[in-house]
Length: 245
Image (cartoon, rainbow, N blue to C red; front, side, top):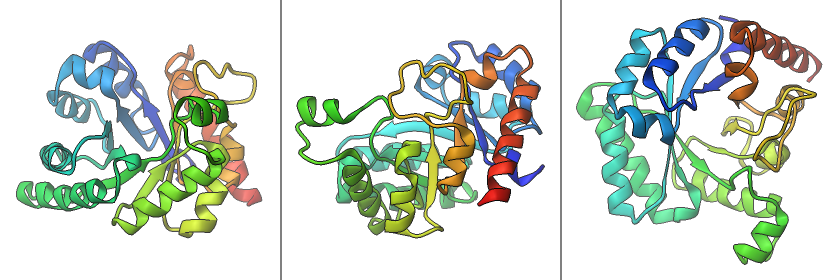
C-alpha cells in the first residue's frame, strides 16, 4: 500500500455491523485503517473488531473517547487493549492523572493478551466546537489553538503517543510537541463537499501540508457511489501535498 493511502482512516459510522463489514471489504487494501466509533460499537459490541478483521481490516482505531475518573478509564482501556487494537483514544481534558492511568492500562492490557500496545491518542477539542462554544458555553477563556496546544502538551507529558485535533491546529501542535508526536485529524473534507456538523475543517491536502499524520474521513468516502475511487482521489491529493511539503 502506498504511503499516501496509509494515512487515510475510514470512519465506519454505521448502525449496522453488516453495513460496516461490507464497506470494509470494499475498502480493504485501499486505505490505511478503519475507525470504529461509538455508534457502531454500541450496535455490535466488541465482537465487531473480529468481524472487521475477517473482512480485511488490518488496523483498527477504536474511537472510544473515554473520559472518567482515572480508575474507571484505566479499566476500560485495559479491556480494550486486549482486542489487539492499533489505536485507541481518550479525552485529554480528563487530566494528567487519568491520562497516565490510561497509558499504563493500555500497556498492561496488551501485554496480558500478548499483542502490541495500541497507539494511545488524546482527544483535544472536538471539531464541532468553535471559539464561541469554547468561550461562552465551556467558559474556557483562551483561543482554541491555545487550548488545543495545551492539551497536546499535557497528553505528551503523560506518555500518550499523539492527539486528535482539527486541521487548523496541526501546525501549532507540531511546533509544540515535535514532528514525531502523532496527529490524527478529523474534519477532513475534499474541496466542494459539505462540512455537515463540523466547524473546523480543511481539505486533505491542507491537513497533510500542515503536518498531519493521519486523516479520518467518513462520508466523503463511505457515502460516495464508488468508495474505493473516492479513497484513491483523496490519496492522490495527499500524495501531491507530500510532494509539495
